[in-house]
Image (cartoon, rainbow, N blue to C red; front, side):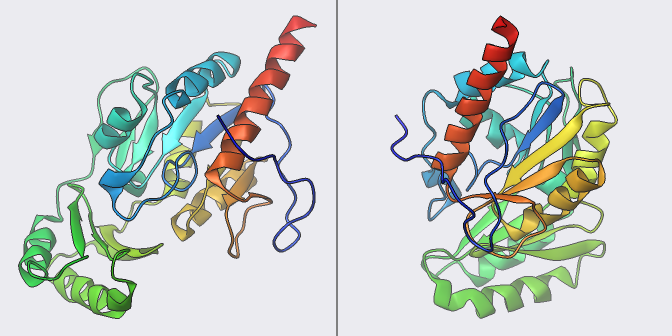
Length: 261
């Protein structure tokens, strides 16, 4: 069960709490730091056992216009949120699964040389994790934040051998991914297809990597919800994943109430 209440005032840079969702909207969600609490490594996250059911119910209320846009690969997202399965984007938009499809369209696996080089360099360094995402690679240093500069420099050096990649900074992580991939572009592409087309997009996320999606949602008459502290382009803020889940539950109850009237 959730243990806290939704914030009631203008918190952190005076951003208000988001309004409850309505049936004319399309919902896009980040995973880590938004739906589930962050963990020191990607494999240590804990997923509430009822989360898949909540997402299923939201899909029914929004005519299936619910998707995930995550830095994780879609295969990993599917395993975390099973049995819920929907359209979405993985690896910050380098992977895309359109509505009604089980096929994942992915950018070429261009990060293999970077992965190999980083793993050799950090093989005996405790606390540094190299994550192979296929089209991208992430170097995590949550367990050794004092190595941030070293990890960033190593990734930048390794990227010189692979054209067409860009570095993206996240919370205690740096990633190399295709230069054309970002969450804003992923949201825009999904919004071109039913059941998202013609709806008002709402995107919730917690990291700097989500800012492009906040901007794109606002461009399409929707809005973003920043989870946690930090400067942002989002119009609204919630403090924790727990508060996100409360907001989603309250939105679902509201939409069900509208249907009963």
